[in-house]
Amino acid sequence: MPADFRSDPHLAALFDYWESKRGARAMPRRGDVDPLDMPASLLPHLELIEFHEGRLRYRLVGTAIVDAMGRDATGRFLDQVLEGEHGRFIARFLGTVLQSGRPAFGFCRLRCGSGGDVGLQRVVVPLAANAGEVYMMLTATALGAGHRGASPPLAARDIADAAIELL
Image (tube, rainbow, N blue to C red):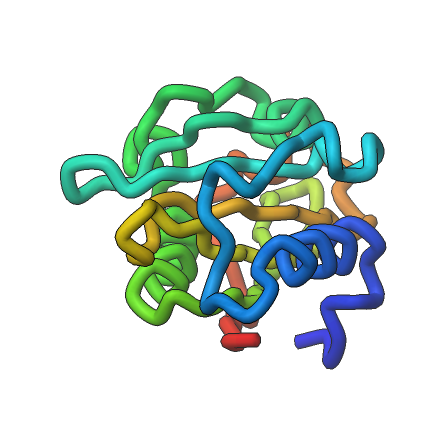
């Protein structure tokens, strides 16, 4: 796993923005976050995910993520969008943030068949409801170079070398 998520400008920008909104609290409230305050270059790489009735649902998916998935997952549940090892890894990653209330960095290699492997890095930060419990999560995603296949890399089911680190 890369030693520092700050090597990617989108991941670092999300974490720095979250820290500025958090202040002395464990996490900022959802109402503290305004996309107009974020760098415009970050927005295509963001996802807003809510915990709804025991499931994880995509509330917003940036255009770079839509392109990498090959479809727009907005309004759909995670288990309807991602399958296999990849889906289980992302569910575990988001569950770690949901349970701990802390931001996390994750990495895996997506197995894209004949297109080769592609590195995926994510920073996930929690957002609170008024009661202070995790209500939503904001993620920034960075895809590494290397994909040469016809299928979108985030549609991959298989992964390798996956790791999650609380920040």
